[in-house]
Length: 183
Image (cartoon, rainbow, N blue to C red; front, side):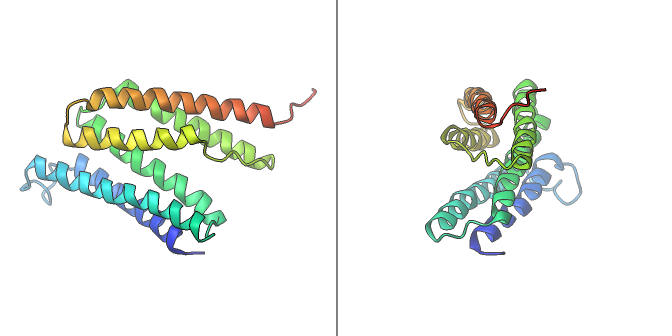
């Protein structure tokens, strides 16, 4: 049950709140003596390490046939926790547009509900290629926003567009595969 891919996903679950803490608790006595640029750097480092676990857990699971039901739950949950921790923390620091974050969170919640509905009907709506691209672009945007690099806001809006488009793909695929009731 706890193979290497699942352990990596679990580590990502643990790193997300640590990164969030560094972003939003800058006034606490534990962090108040550290300059905000170092907190940004530490948060970015944690984010990069956590993002790398996303690549490696998927690669190891597929390569060594270690795909498990727990992994199918942990991996997307860890991805969402990490990206939402980054986006919400950045929004609270006023580095990410509120509407962009609202659209991303709304899509993530809606698609999660759609996937639960699909599973309850015996369907598996796996992550699409566009969904994977969306995740990568979201992670790159978070990195740029954390470091306050040029083009960060543009990347955020590209991530929003990809997020909404991949959400459309999930909805389209769901309705293609779900038998409609004749009631």
